[in-house]
Length: 143
Image (cartoon, rainbow, N blue to C red):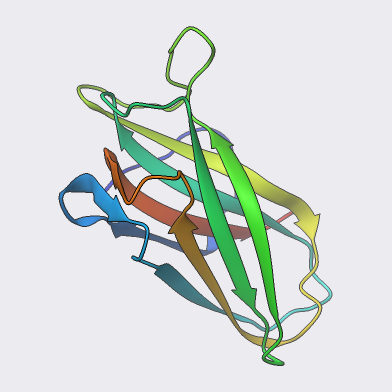
């Protein structure tokens, strides 16, 4: 379990998945299913990343698939910046772990009511990515 601080709204949905031994195969897909009932509301969407401090990179590239209630699928490539140019981690934490909740979209509207599926694959050009321990999403209503 990990915590995020700061001023935020109670999440409509938040779930994090632990990656076994912090070894993420390029074939391992992490998925989250979210039921959206209110298509008039605006939402903030975050990607949660927990990494070890011996992670070899300053960023993390992900492929994200969104499956809409209609069955349509959209695919995006996302870059998550985890450290600055000097190697200082952006996330919060202590010891060998850092946690970061990265905004993917603010004040977005979901176009369809129903079940959405969000899936993530690591896209770092290595078969097995080391030292990413958890991936998750957080969706909250924006004010």
